Length: 464
Image 1 (cartoon, rainbow, N blue to C red):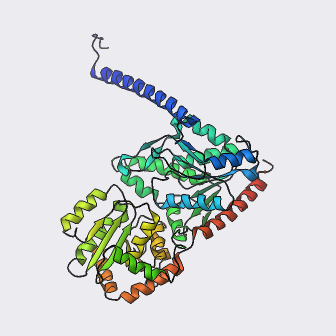
Image 2: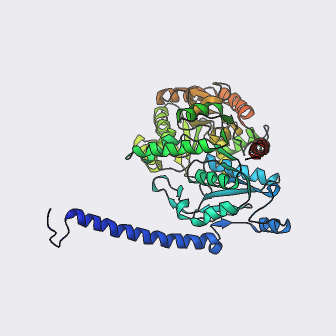
């Protein structure tokens, strides 16, 4: 055995260093938790948003905030993203709570904390989070570091909880459902594995671990919903063997204008944005990430350059936004391509959809993209990849167009459509007729399903 000389060897020094680092981390976490406890307890209003009219309602109705008769209980809507983050799932959540509140239901959103304050007319429970540097402005919720959120979920009277995410919000939804013995609904929105493979490309073994947790969440749900039938193949691929129910997404732009108003709006929008009459106006809205096929779009535009006059607008944010700008410049088409970043004003976004002739969406990543239906609401047909999950709702040449992911074929299709504008117009009208269901209609169906789920759950668990 080697005698100790009084000086630590490299291994001992490393162990000592790690021990010191651990205690420093522990102390910092204790400090953070103490701070978080104060925040969640009400000393910082941005952690728990409860509008005065809701407080007055609770007081006037004599509802005990620790327990309420189920007829006055809240519908919990859980998700890992919420404004100022805007994506398809966020819009789904926002429209759920909007329509639920309009019809007398009491929605309550549970979501990770965000430093930007929001103004809403329904209660929002927030929990500790940290930024995801590779996917700003997204944040990762850490409920384990937030002791108060667990107490709030035990005390907040829910009638049903519905999670639109299998991650931190999903874990909290499972906890609330088990503690209060109420039904749990989970919606399978995204191809989570693709996201994880990008985020953990240097540690691929993490993907398998997280996918097991995602599967565990959906197995814990009493009901699993998918936004369209083709999504079932994806959730089966992930290993889920339970029953799934198709509950469509809606469209908040569908009721903004009548069918007769759209042609005038499209002409005015083109004029406002200075789009030449002879140019085909192209649009992409969504996360600027490689999985969405934004490079395919750029390569398609490069092939169109000098052959077919076009104007292209990119709207959205994402980790690949700067790379896209550089790539567009390298192709020498920056004078025809405009990258706007995120647009959260729905009226402005509506005009952008209206100004477009074609919506380009060569994504293999998406399950049921809202943006395709939003474009359809403005009689703007989409070009999707044949065989993709998102393309299930498209009848080629009737309410949209299908092609391969080849930039050459994508460009050829755009050129042929530019030469036959009447075909674009007819297809756009059919897209609006077949792809635009209002959120009011969708959520009324959801409310009926909620009531049926609760009634069935109560019967099945009455004697347990």
